[in-house]
Length: 257
Image (cartoon, rainbow, N blue to C red):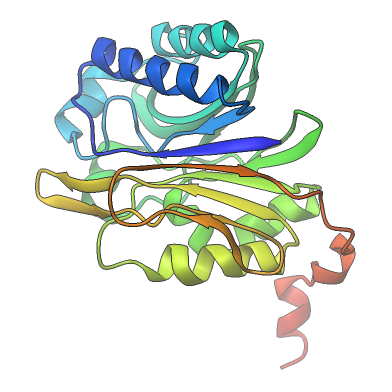
């Protein structure tokens, strides 16, 4: 599978403008043979836009989902994207994956909310992260801070995930996440981890870039710098390393004390 990460500067919170830009990105990348584009966390309506999270949030299957489905179908390219999802009185920091036909194959609500802004804006996700088929690859989905907790990616690996997608919004000062923890999660779980960040300022928050595609030996297949970037990489074949060999339960570890 040929995968692209878009590491943009933060966009405006105008959905029409966001979709116009996303369509340009996806159209250009699909013309280069890209099978899937991974966008950052809360591309809709923007990460550091707490006043817009509740006022603009959409339901699953609403206008934002339909617009992204149309872009994927028009360009024959899968898309992974983060967005603010409304469910009754709650708003979730969510991510979805649509395949090249525009069908939604994966959806997830962030479990590990980071910082005061996220906790004030969003409800905690309660469902385990999903594993689904994408272009013949068993694929899992997390959001940003989730990847820093090993139990989430381990659960995905136990369920057969060979590829883990991680839309993120990682600020400057947290380089250990892409440079150490993402690579560790790939190595621990014999998986490929695709971690898509922003670059540059969004009001008082400055994002650190360094989006990365880490493979099962813990190395970076591709990594961005600090500035706006696009990464394109052909993913390796899934490793034959047995999942059972990396599936020690935390309870098992405690029993050794």
